[in-house]
Structures are given as structure tokens and as C-alpha cells.
Image (cartoon, rainbow, N blue to C red; front, side, top):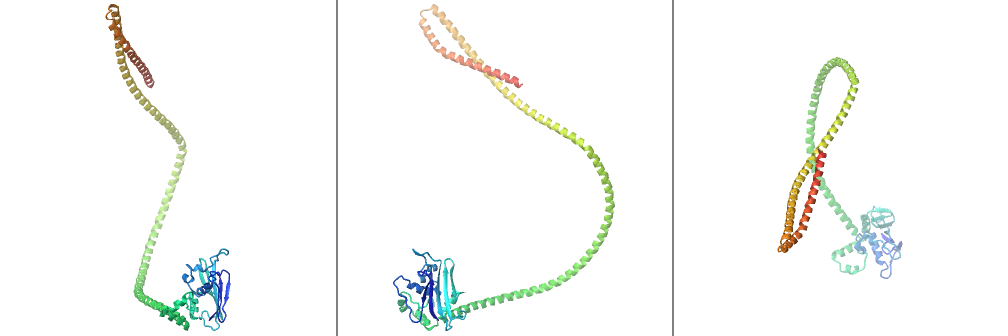
Length: 409
């Protein structure tokens, strides 16, 4: 197989559909740094099954989609298609259907990537085996990237052996041998599981045999049980027939009794109708008596409440009258004291007047005494006035209390 054409659409810097024809001989791409030469090599690796984002110089596989520029919007997908010349028919049997094979890989944002061969969707493993049989692939040393020459010179023997194997065209055989070993391991695992299943089935077979014997015993017991149930049903039928005859005789007697009871019921119905005709006047009288009783009960409750309030008012007024009498007695005593003090003052004033007429030498002492009495007189008059007002107030309270007591009585 030989590469004939490479088509890119939205892959990294190739935002527009771009096609590179690979003819016989040497095909070269020349340009300055940053023009996209390395992107062509990465497109080849990517379409041949490369799944490592680091090999594509990105953090994720979706980084191969054109991310946009100042004048161009970002693309939603990227697609790379590689055409192969299969005229020698060296492709795997599942894909060896045409002289030209077009292998394409398309990745969409948030949807992953898909492989197609001649428009038919194919597994990634089948595409990798296709290129492995052609002694190439995403990991092929024939795809030399920047700095890989020095790596090949300093490579370890195992890496050099892989290069020689791919040059000899046997890399696909090693891949197929690895797949065959994996399948053999899986087959051995399946055989072990089959042995375990056979052992489990043998255990289940022993249990089923034991259950079969139990089922046979169950069928024998079931047959005997059905025979016994048949005898029991015959006996129950005989008992039921006798009970039916007895019930029929009892039904006849009950019919005669029901006829007699019906006659009694008719007589009772006529008596009930007569009683219902006499019932309305009695109901009216009972309603009137109930209404009169309700009004009497309400009046009695009202009078009882009024009586309780009057008794409470009488007790309160009696307590107030007792307090007023006590206050009146105390004020009367105060009045008597005030009257005695006033009489004493009048007597002293009369004595002073008599002394003024007869004794000139005692004039100065009398004047001093008069001056002292005159100074004390306003205070005593004020006290007397206060006591008189208190007596008047208590007398008014007493009159009010006596009037309230008479009204309450």
C-alpha cells in the first residue's frame, strides 16, 4: 500500500479544506517556521490512530480543532482523510474491498472522534492494524519529527530492534501475535470459568436429582391425599344431604310461624297507627311546657345572679359604713380635743384681760405672753380649720354611706 493523497479540514492551522497530493518519487513541503509543516506530520499520525494529546502538542485531543483567530471564527470539528493505493490487495480481509482506501478521522467538540474507511464507520483498532500490516502507523519510526534523529542514534537496542522490524515489514505480525496472546489468555480464563460452571452444574444436578426423588414421593402422597379427599367429599355430601332435609323441614315450620307472626305484626301496625294519631297533641303540649320551663329557668338564673351581686354590694357597703363610723368617732375625739384647747385659750385671754386692768407691773410679762399666744394662735387656728374640714368630709361620707345602705337594703 502507498499513500496517495492527504486532505485536511479544520485541523490546527488548516482551517480551510486543504489537499496534498503524494505522487511517485519525493514530495516535499518547504516553508518558514510556523507555516504548518509539523501539522502535516501530526495529521498523518492522528489519522493513523494517535490518541495521546502530548504527541499532538496539546493538552487535550480537542486542541487539534482550529481554535479561531482575529479574523476567523473557531471551527466546530476537524477532519483528516488519507487515501491509500490498494491495487496489490495487501489490506486486511475486512477492508480489502477496493483498489483505493480512504481512511478518515473526524473529531467534534464534546462528541469525540470517529474513524471511517471508504465512508463506512470502523473501529480504531481495525485502522491501527491496517497501518501495522503496512509497516507503518502512528508510532512508526518512519515518521521523523523534530529532534528524533538524535533519539534514533542514541536509541536503546529494543528501540533499534523495533525500527528494524518495521523496516522488515513484520511489525503487524507482532501486533497480531500480541492480540492472539490476549485472546488465548481470555480463552484460558473462559475455560477456567467453564470448569467452575461445570462444577456448579454438577452440584445443581445432584440437588435436582434429590428434588426429583422428593417430587416423585410428593406425587405418590398427592395421589393418596386426593383419594382421601374424595372419600371425605362423599361423606360431607351425605352429611350435607341430611342437613338439607332437616333444613327443609325447619323451613316449613318457620313458614307457618312467620304467617302467625305476620298476623301479629298487622295488629301491631294498626295499634301503632292509632297511637301515632294521638301523638301530635301530646307533642305540642310537651313543646309548650318545655318553652315555659326554659323561660323559668332563664329567669331563675338571672334572679340568682342579681341576688349574688346585691349581696356582694351590701357586704361592701357594710364594710365601708363600719370604716366611716370608726373615722367619725376618731374625728369626734379630735373635735373634743380642739374644743378643749379653744376653751383654754379663751380662759387664758380672759385672765390676761383681767390682769391688764389691775396690775401695771405685770404688763410687760402679759405683753410677752400675749405676743407668744398671738404667735401660736394662727397655727392652732389652721389645725382647727383642718379638723373642721375633716369632720365635714367624714359627715358627708357618712351621709353618702347611709344613703347607699338604705338604697341597697
